[in-house]
Length: 605
Image 1: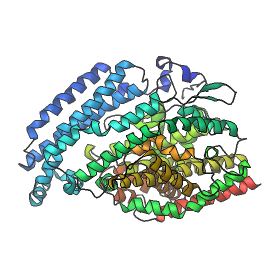
Image 2 (image 1 turned 90 degrees about the vertical axis):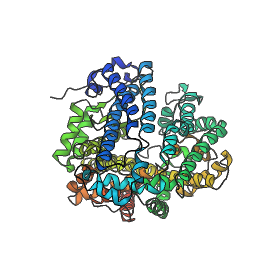
Image 3 (image 1 turned 135 degrees about the vertical axis):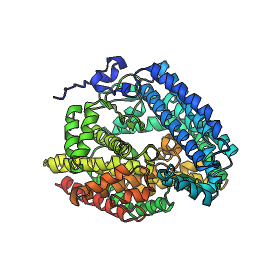
Image 4 (image 1 turned 180 degrees about the vertical axis):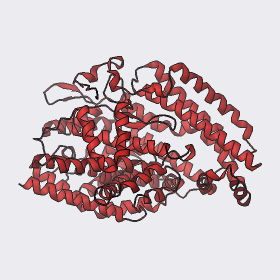
């Protein structure tokens, strides 16, 4: 029988050692002790130093190529395990200085290994094609053929060994602006005080800001909005400097590697055509009238003359109580994911039973949620659980990542045992789509249905429309910097304000402060990452329809098992979705429109 674990409202105040064991992840499955981690850390360090024996000899023979490759992969495989333990044990309590040191040391070790193995790809690319083809026909190298195909794609963009090592060793420098942003945004920036729902005056945090934007009190929402943005506006030139420097770094690396643009440098190495980005942007822009309709519905339901930016997140259905305990959430998720088959559900149950999940908040714990792990570990999930529907969606989302990782690692060899970011968000958001379908089918109260529909539409708005908006801005700042234009705070704010108005339409009041939103978005430091949230959500909507209505579960699981064994568009094609065309996007917008129609009808009654 499953042990019932109660999560009280006071748990966020508890210290790490006070969290019930059943609600923590079991990191002893990675290393039995810190001492065992330390021994492996030193082994990775020594192995990295020994990689010099292959420098200049990778192309000598098929045997030498295989030996160098196996040594490289073995080193990276061990490094991943060391890294996962260090960053997760640090994230569970960032006030623990011992584990803060672990995390810092493993970051440096990662840079050391990157530098030590930087020789491999350039030396492979120096091998004549005919000779490499002969090598790859040998039994020892045949299983790596697709891996070498992906390496050869980089031939026009790979530098001589010494230059590759130099760039690898400078990775900390290229990440400096992102790190500065993180320290300023998470630690040094103070937002001032705001009132809570109870009237208490408290310091504003990013977490409290998100909660207050969902408040039914418009005065509280506006106070939180104005207070937060006053702080970002006061540091606008500092944030402009960090973002500008980071963008310049992307453009420098793209130019150094002979790409036409930073966007091309970010997309092509994953085996994707750059048209995927343009197809998304065009399709989303073509369907902006749907977002405008949703904003118009918000104006009508809220009974306001204009929708302000601080009105975009308050639930349109406020008289539904949807408190969900963690135990109840597990049952809901299991039932929602049943269309994926018993084999899929068994893995989800293992995550619950075998402590793959770190559930509740504690002092010093990293905020947010993620799925992590390495090839030789369980998948792990970090949560900061609250008893609400949002957290049920978060649980389903992160389980999508974790089961994807589990199936890939248990099907593919290590060198194909991961998957590109482009495919990662599809697995997680497919689970969210299945959860939405389950909730709509099992809750017949019109108010509950409206609540779930609002949840879905807000999620789609935030993932497809908003992330594409971010992607447009990100592309623009890279282009401006490449053309020698200065990325000043005024210039970026002017463009961002116009872009925001284009997306949300005539019913959104053009608040001056929202033009500075670019200053607080960490994803602008992720190098063309955000567009993949949007493509993933759209593909997931289409896949969920295939799983539920067209018996597509087995095809879908073939995609989950494929890992990096083929190019991304071919992998997702196994699930029945062609992401080189706009059909999957059109289908996703059709679902959005259908559910918008449903919500409009329910709220009109």
